[in-house]
Structures are given as C-alpha cells and as structure tokens.
Length: 178
Image 1 (cartoon, rainbow, N blue to C red):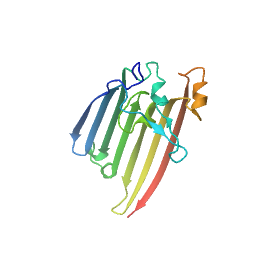
Image 2 (cartoon, rainbow, N blue to C red):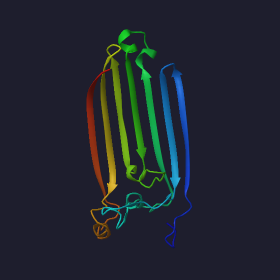
Image 3 (cartoon, rainbow, N blue to C red):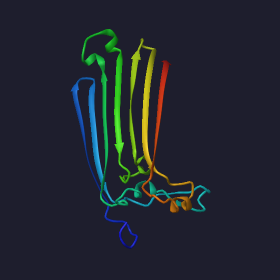
Image 4 (spheres, rainbow, N blue to C red):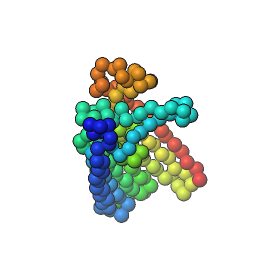
C-alpha cells in the first residue's frame, strides 16, 4: 500500500517452459514474480455481515507487500517405458512436482497459497485393461503469520513477523477397476 493506504502499482510477470524429450515424457516449469498486490482480500465468518482482511498473510513480510515476491512450479510426468523396453515399465507412469510461493506473492486466487512449499508424486501401474494401482504422496510446508482468530489478536501480537511453521503429509494407495 502507498502512504495514503491505496494500492501500489501492481505487476505480474511470468514465464513457463514445456519440454518433451521423449514421446511420453514431459517436463514443465513455471516462474512468476509479482510486485505489490492485485486486490484486497477479505473473508466473512458471519454470512457476509462483516468482513476481515486476509492480507495479513502477505503483508507481514518485512516489506509489507511492496517489492517483488516469487512463485515457482516444476513438474515431470513420464511413462517409464520411454527409458527402457520392459512390460512392467510400459505399464508404469510417474508424476512428480514441487511448488513454492513466497508470502507476499499476489496473483488471482493465491492468497491462501502464500508462504507454502508443496511437493509430491504419484505412480500408476496398469495391471491390465481394467485394473490399476495408484500410489500418491503429497506434502506441504507452510510458513504463515499468526493471523487470528480475530483482528484484535493480530493487533496485539508483539512480533508481526513471527511465523508458525506447519507441515502436513498425505499418502494414499488406490485400486481402480473399470
């Protein structure tokens, strides 16, 4: 925000790359940088009668929403048979990914993703035309400011840059029969 409380000039820049080194293998990468904020972000917990700002998620960085903040995402998806001819590898697909978004990075719909690093992968094995197994693992590490449960508790927090770091991990094994 500028000195009068208004929003600074917002800018969003980005690039993406897609590379297909083999017939069934694709690597993707995206990088983006935002400066300032795209819009105010609010939440209502009483059906729209009152609203509280969500911008504390991004505005507790030392530059308070000014300056540049980055986001990065990389992904690799492949059928393992691209690398060696083998019946098991031909029936196996793998996807891995990683994503990191700075607190203070603003782009449409990203306010609740700020300050999070996500990574994981999924492997599929096709037994036959009707049956397959899936193993998936996802992880998320979030470095978030203490922003609640009320605006009053945020205001009395002596250290506005104090972060809570949380991690969550989920692993699932699935079986599909068509």
